[in-house]
Each structure stands twice: as structure tokens, then as C-alpha cells.
Length: 113
Image 1 (tube, rainbow, N blue to C red):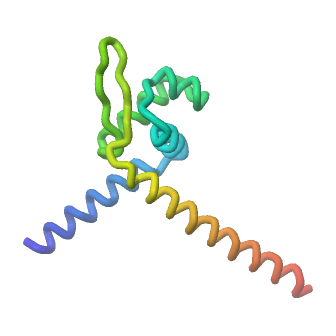
Image 2: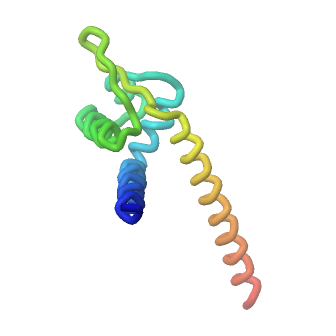
């Protein structure tokens, strides 16, 4: 029973990570962090074609990263949990640290000649 729960937790974790595995979806999440948006606003703001925005929003909804609500004819999207932005910011900090280490390594290599 315990192993099954752990597997399910890892499966859900991987599902969230798969939702974050596209740069356009990350852009959408950061845009939604500024406030609720409809598809038209996302298209205008990000310059991504409407069918692609809709496809990314579908993935983000399936991963429970965004929620939608209808107001008349319009559908608005919002972050399901603002902590996803904190997680993305943490990943950016890890990435920046990794890049700094690579720069240091590259500089060291050039001085070895």
C-alpha cells in the first residue's frame, strides 16, 4: 500500500513537470501570475498563435496548473496555485547557478593554454 502511494505521488510529480516542460507554457504561467487572462489577451501579450495557446492551456489544465472560469462568452484562466511561480523561480535560480559554474569552468579552461 505504501509503495503504491509513493508511486502515485511520483506519477503526479512527473505530470506537473511535464506541464512545465515547454517554454511557452512557462511564459503563460508567468503571464497568469500577473492576473487572470483570456486567450485573446495571451495571444496579444505573448505573440503566440491562438491554436497553440489553447493547446498549451489544455495541457496546463490537465496538469492542474491552471483553472478556467466562464464569464458570458469569455473564458478566463488563472493559476491553480501561486506556488508554481515560486517553484519556477527556484528552478531559475538553480539554472543561474549552473550557468555561473559553467562560465567559471570555461574561463578556467581558457587560462590552461
